[in-house]
Length: 176
Image (tube, rainbow, N blue to C red; front, side, top):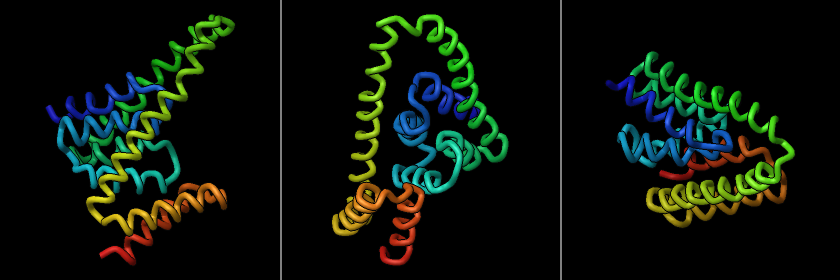
């Protein structure tokens, strides 16, 4: 039964999510933390931060890690397969359909609405992480990490992986 739950926990967000890994992270969090309770919000946030510091797509890394934690090697395989299969099937189907109707005004209009929806989902996820950080490490450390990260990303165009690694080092050395 655990393999079926793992499959559904990653298949459903990937079948209904549009926009890649970052867009489906809130949906995966709802399943892993909210529905099944396999992780706490804090553990999910830490897993996401670690996954962002590593190369390759975030959704498959999250699936592999959560699947392994829940049910070992078999769980990792099931979760990664559930993450990849819907994307592959939908991509092949949508590609044919969109290519056939690429000049349609409806298709062009639909494409314009994708980015704002993804931006709102990412804003909701960021707010959740901000509140979780505030509760676990306090306002001062949250503010320091947030301000330094924003300056590094916006002003100095630092790669996000280095920003995440810097926050991990700060947390490991400074935060008790």
